[in-house]
Length: 497
Image (tube, rainbow, N blue to C red; front, side):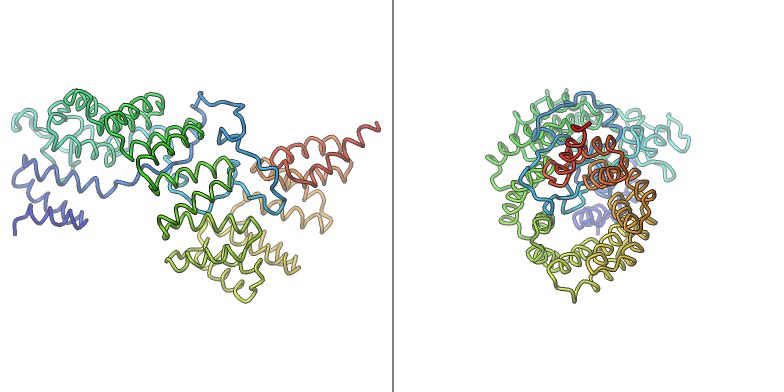
């Protein structure tokens, strides 16, 4: 069988390693075989290429460098100032992350796949080391303009520093695979952008695909308004789903959820009942703490795709925090039937069984959760087991579980809060106060920390500190009745002075 035909067949069957090996054999015999060179380039790209449309969390560097953010946005128009639902009771208050966002039903790729530094975001060691060939090669033995196609067995596949970008940009069959290779495999965004500029000269800026890639490069460089301009131009050329999703991502990055929602609704008129667009809308509503509308769109997603894990998990979380553990249990069992098998699922199953009074399944669920738990989620499992111990009035076991959680994750604010309460019950007031003070600096979005600290300081006679801290509790959770009652008592006390 022809070697190139075998390589093509293996590429279609996603056997990329075998495809690369066959292409390498062809290139060893014929170094300037453009078909084999392009196919190997596609296979290398496919090995590392991921879906980069997923909405991601804003990194630390982005937060520091972002100078366009409004500091006093109206509630519901910014992720930093979400909608506050006054009608929520204490039991229905959903916990929040350390950034102040409500806890979601799933961990999304954007929250765990961020780059470490700005330098790593712009250039990886792979592309830096490929600036020069690994072995010396005489330029006289190679025809000018094709030097970059000659690869060394010890060196990189493509010598990017010697590429004639203008030449390759004029060849349609090569230019797009080459861009994807530079963008995804080498992660050399600056050189990829140079190729985009050359390609746009060839097509006279009338190719929507190149306008989209130009916008993606601007996005990675943090030039959001330039990216928006390019993507808007791509939309005029051809309104595609990918362009709409990237524009939505840009508006989320700019902290403009209302604009992102309007864009998604416009896209839904073209791509009716598209699950990806409905998911983005549900996530945005969840981010601005409009949980009822978020759940409405997740239900719509399930009408279109009954196997959507994110929609099932988020609806289950909503039912659990709405004091309906029986309904939440049904959704989590559905996830188990769909093949989801991890510590988080068994942890949630155990909690639902406990609060739904199905006590025979609680211990076995948490045993399975502990056996599957890893370092990043073991602390949460032990913390939830402590709640079970508190529910059966075994405070000694609860304290041991909380200490185990803190030994795994010393910054677990909820565990610090519960341990502070247990220490107070053991009459260790100073230890309790220290734990609350330390946890408040780690997770200022937990209203329980502020309220417990205000209550403790009020009991020891430090009324001024109590007055200041209880206001933080009300700011985080305006519907907390006990905080309002404590604030009213403090105001009454101060009025007598």
